[in-house]
Image (tube, rainbow, N blue to C red; front, side, top):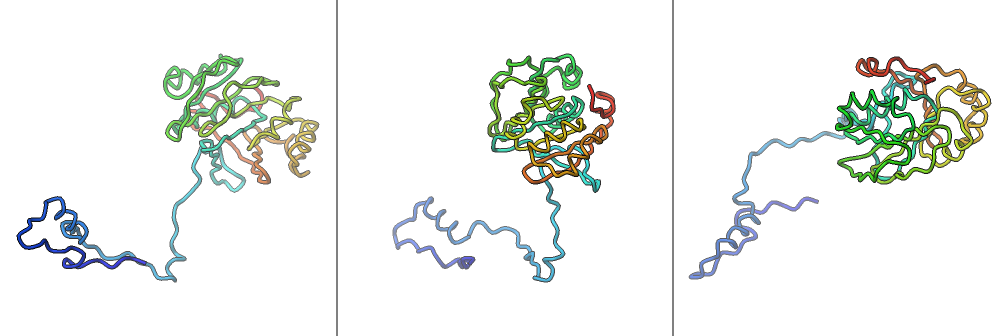
Length: 262
């Protein structure tokens, strides 16, 4: 319930006769009564109950646009989170690099841990030599990375089939994305620990094994060996979504067309 507005004579006691009121006290009394704060007056903005149904707000997900879904709508991946977030991508380098570029474009600092630094060098040069949000480190050499809501961090671990334990783990505002080229022996453990799993085209045997690890329905197990380049099945808990990643013109000039094989 709103407190009624005071009239100019309410709430403040007049000073006693012959006792001058201190300036600070007079100021407080004026503020309490509303005097001295008279601003412009505008009509009230109100809606009737029937008009509420016509009100719509352009509210969408916050994150990185990773492509379009089956209906052609933007698919958004929220990488910057206040809680630890682990992502595993079983797929190609091209998709991981697009994600890194787009994360850096949102203001995140991207640290790439890789044993194939030359494959990432063109991105480093395109981002200003590592001074504008993207830096590459050798495996096991990623320094401590302070992360906050204002400076979120994405660590991309491109460390081959059997990535070692990383020195920098996920934490508040620090997401770790592990890239696996195929379903390696350590993949089932990694995907079970991850909050989000992305899968591109894999062999029928790998698809069956992965289906057992993350309880995929038969339709998805059958579809994974047939996926076209640039299409990823993203799985989180019980949610699954096929996303097609299409490069922008700058990404096309820098990375080329989508591809599964590196």
